[in-house]
Length: 369
Figure 1 (cartoon, one colour):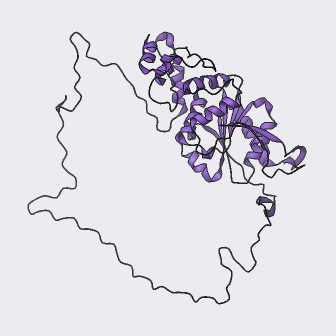
Figure 2: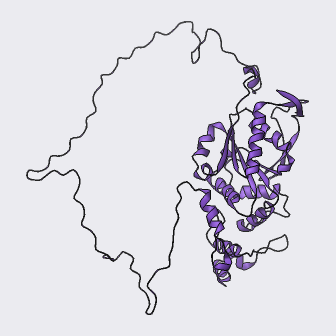
Figure 3: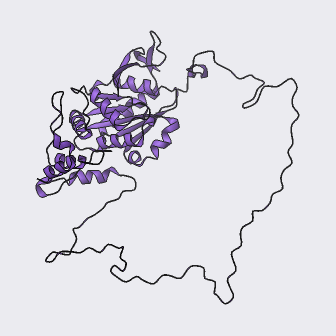
């Protein structure tokens, strides 16, 4: 192990939460005077983080409980201030509003976090535009699907320049791998294991004396009792084949067919009152406007990049990036206003959002104008 670059393990690290900035100790034991040493695991993690920042990618750091995942992440981030790391610690069952509040406080934005999600995202995206920042989320396995969707929204946005790191436990890594929005965007799956040279007693971080198994006891074996109980032998039940219901016999004279006969082809045009049959006014073109729906099974990021590249308002092409998980109402109209290059007035302590911003009909009229 390389001990030339040792650092104190008792330093505190500021982490943004939904309730404000909280300073946590690097190591949960808080050992006085302890110093850290660089192991091959820490060096490999630093190299993976450096590649993630260079590629502006998404990295998932996984490790079992007690292996030093959080300690390694904060130690490497403190040694690289040029990454401009933004550290988040979401609470269990967090909502996207909690992530917005955490980012608002982590970027030291003035005032209180706006209640309007679109306005809050405008401020956050503006602060994440320049320079390139590393967004580190600890305990990411506690995030819900809505929070992961919000992180994907920030990562895919063309106005933000961020590299994303999700620190998760190994017991929940499968849940992150099966998430389509992450599996198609993660550029590095890094596993952090315990150091192989550490003795088993040092790996146990729980307080109290370490428990060693007795030599006369095998694994998963109860200690011997004074009066052993006689073993009980249960007679094996005879195997009975499972009865399958017999198909009913066809009546005499009918031919047995393996499949039902094919249905006759339906005539063109609507033939039922419940089907859609549009009516057009006179002197109007009967051709419908072309609408194309692109469905991606794994939510690939390439489709998002193509959509953002097609955004050219001067030529009549708009790409709208809707505010994630916003309620119904004027929010889509506000997203159209932002796609046109305009923004809603920012609220402050003395002035709130204008009255039309909360009115659906007026918001859509202003957007159409």
